[in-house]
Image (cartoon, rainbow, N blue to C red; front, side):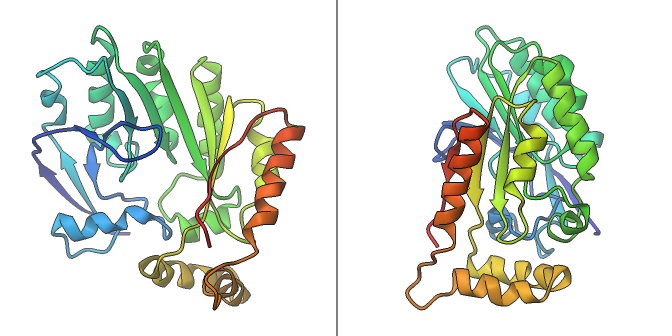
Length: 273
């Protein structure tokens, strides 16, 4: 996948958020090279001025670390990131996320840091993450099947690399969670993902796939490549006449059962379908 990279300057890097449990967010980049077909953040394309498709451009907020010189952020809970992945491939080159974390780590008091990523690159920064008194790393998984991953998350690292990163973060004593998101009907094996990561994570979060019209046009071709019969199954779930589907309630109950057996409490963020 080709990528258009542009360096830009911004006025703020830590901004207020409407997300639950994330009062403030830091997005070191605009756009995301991972280009996941289900990504709701593709709306950022409208505000970026880019003609490229989602996943084909990244704006690098090159002055972001300098903005932290203005004030201390010790009173804030800050999430990396809400509309990008702070550890997407360009982070290897620009190290914006690492530089921001370095500056946050020496603030007194320190801010509370949380990171949500699909990337194994986050394990590079274990040395800095370990300096925080309150830091949580979340890894997002929809599948452990690399064939499916390549079609729905085309640029994300291979599953084995991400599993290795999970283990490294866990071994470093950094609090972490697994976000099974989005749950792709007939594709996401919740029980398998839970079993693989239960020894390493503090808790699990779950989110079902939310299909908006603009997302369906990207999801549908991927489903066709995985298994053409999935298209009619998804249409039955998401485009029923009464606007509701009975598909998700049994999934919800399965999550509670699996987590009860695994002795942990799930956190669900389910969209109505």
